[in-house]
Amino acid sequence: MPVGWGAGGDLTHWLSRRLTTFPRIVLLGLACAGLALVSMPAAAARVAVVLSDDSAPYQEVFQAMQALLDDSPHVLGRAYAAGLAASSLNDAQLAVAVGVRAAEALASLPVRTPVLAVLVPRAWYARNGRARLSDSGRRSVSAIYLDQPFARQAQLIRLALPETRRVGVLLSTEQAGLAGELDLALQGQQLSLVLGTLSGEQRLIAPLETVLSDADVLLAVTDPLVFNRNTAQSLFLTSYRYRVPVLGYSQSLTRAGALLSLHSSPAQIGRQAAETVVAALQGGSVRLPMPDHPAYFSISINEQVARSLGYTLLPEAELEKRLGAPR
Image 1: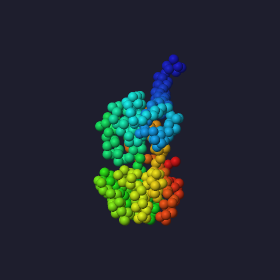
Image 2: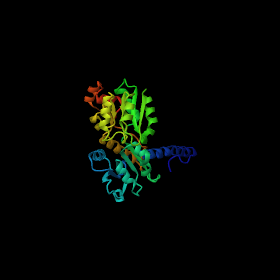
Image 3: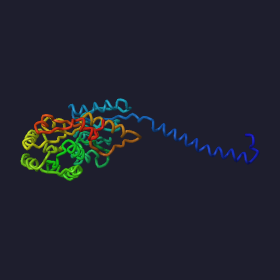
Image 4: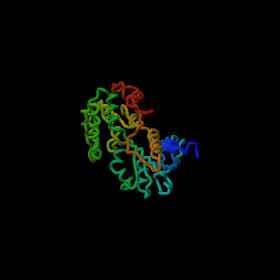
C-alpha cells in the first residue's frame, strides 16, 4: 500500500488524480487509433475497365487510368464490349464503362457491380442510360459526361468573342428539351439564345440558315442528328458563307472548320476517371459521386478560320487559364 493510504485525505487525493488522468489516456489512445485508421491506405480492389472497342480514344482512357493508378493498391483489368460476359467482372468491386457500347454491354449483364460510365453523352445517360445501367436501382451507377457544361461554353464565348450578343443553336427535336438550360446559361453571360429546331427528315440547311441569319456565333451541341460526318461539311460551309463562327465541342471539329472548340481529351477523361475510382473505393463500400461534366478540358483554335473571318483571339493557353482549367 502506498505511504499515506492510512489517511482518508491521501486516499481521496490519489483516486481523484487517477479518475482525472484515465479519461485523458483513453481519449489519447482513441485519437491515435483514429489517426492510424485515417492514414491507412485503401484496401486493394479489382476494377474492371470495359472498352467499347479497341480504337485509340478508348485505349487512351485506359492507359491514362493505368498510369495514374500505378501507385495505388488497385488492379485494373481490361475487357471489351463485344462478347462481354459476367465472368469478366469476377471479384471486381467496380466497373468502368468507356463509351456507350461498353455501358450498354454492362447494363445487359445480371451482375450488380457498381458502374462508372465515362466518355458518354449526357443526353444518352439522362434519356435511358442511367435507367438501364441502374437496373431499377439495384446497381449503383454514375457518369463522367463527354459534354462540356453549358455555363463553361457560355463563359468561353464571352471571353473569346466579347462582342457577341446572340448565340445560335440548332437542336433536333430529340434534344429540344435542352433549350431552357442553354438559355439560362447564356443569360448568365448576358447572351441571348437564337434557337432552331431540326425535325424528323427535315433537311439541315433551311433551319440552319434561319439561325445563322440572326446569330453572331453558332454553338455546336453534341446532337448526332445535327452534327455528324454527313452534315459537318455543309454546316461549316454554310456558317462560313454567313460569316458566323462556330464554337465546337471536339478537336476534330476545330480541324474541320470551327473557329475554336472546348473539349476534353480521352487522357483528361481517364485522369478524372482514375481520381473518381480512388475516391469511390475509400472505405468499406463503393461510393460513387453524382454524375458530372469533365473537370479537365482544353481549347483549340483554327488559326486559318480566325484569319479568314477577321478574328484575333487570345492564345489557347490564356483562354484555358481564364476559364479556370485545372492543371
